[in-house]
Image 1 (cartoon, chains in turn yellow, red):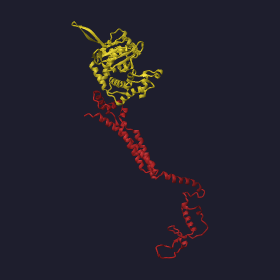
Image 2 (image 1 turned 30 degrees about the vertical axis):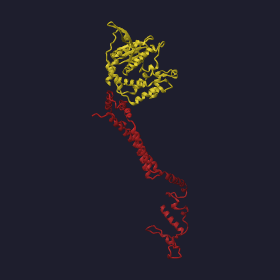
Image 3 (image 1 turned 180 degrees about the vertical axis):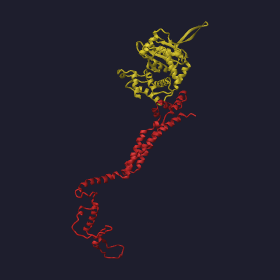
Image 4 (image 1 turned 45 degrees about the vertical axis):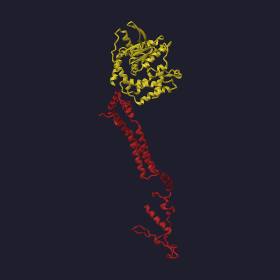
Length: 311
Length: 260
């Protein structure tokens, strides 16, 4: 297990050459990749969200594509479409794959795309395949979607419905860098020095092996029950929560905890893993009631209160 | 041949359970001695003590046997925290990570000492209580103390004595220090010697005073001297006819001797 820890530490160190700070964000993105799931990334503009994901893709030798969602984006712009191609004097339809055919797909500002376009992407996320016309095309594995949302500029947006948001394993919050980190960022990007290149540390097969290994990390019955009780508490705490998390959250919490244990070089899931992963797993799955919002509570505050009572 | 993890965990659990059972046994002995002490002061049958102690011990034996002691090991050894329970809950799983976890636990468990879980303070306290209870029990049985008899008989007698001692002090001489009751020495007017002159012969060898020579027997006769049928109608009886004054004299004589 120490070898696994060493791999991830080296990976973070390599990414750190390009992306300063955002360690927690990168770790949680890695957790979502290991869980074979997708993540929502929320943060203000300019926090290196796109850069971090692209650098991660480079370090793992994975194909990276980016989609900038706009209100006029069509589903075929994501999935691909048939084009007419002339081959040896004959015209035939040829499928032109869309940007979704990548290993890591960054869907920027997903809340700006229309519901129809959002559905096309969500179908690809869920089924890991794309249906165009009568043909179904399998996506290359590993496949991971990172959808970002801009917390400001909400005008003219189409917020993801809760049912769709539930399909994302984590909601990762990107935060501002510290003063030292910001100073380092300025030094790197204003000194005119050559942009650092990231070494390839993992390949597809190794990543698939890590994804398989993640599910093998054992968890004790007590900790599993604790995770389930936390999720159930989100449904029972009517004093705080209007709508709680679904059983999908229970699966997500346990999986995310296993991935975190693997990244930290532990051969078992600890209570700390459950506690730490509860926030990104739950913050997009619960809706606070009026009373909690009136008190000025945020979703993370409600989750913290639930965790406190669950001990 | 590597020892299986299940066997190691079973041994660990049974060692800790055994230590706890020993402590519970001491508690059962304390219960037995306490009840026996209380029962000794009453007339309650003594088998209640052993029955209660045995009932307690058997009950805790069943409860302790079912308890999971692995949590105690994890609490005492932070490096084993959550590892043993995880391995135990996934004992049937076969994958590289679980195998590595089991191997790691086997290594770490070697440093687990059973003395860590031995409750020294509780054992010492129990032994002290047992010794004290034993002393109390020996005291009670040696003096045949009984609460009922003590409350009903001994205590009133003691209280009465304390009350009478105030009255008696004004009549007796100060040299008379022994306890006085009416049973042995008779009424107070016995101490009046009187003015009657009597002849007493003292035996120099034995200090016996023969008062029988001083009086005549009173005879009583039956009408018939032979038995015609088994039913006795009358007969002769002889009884002492010692004058009361002479009886008193003898009493006073011995009284004086007691004084001396």
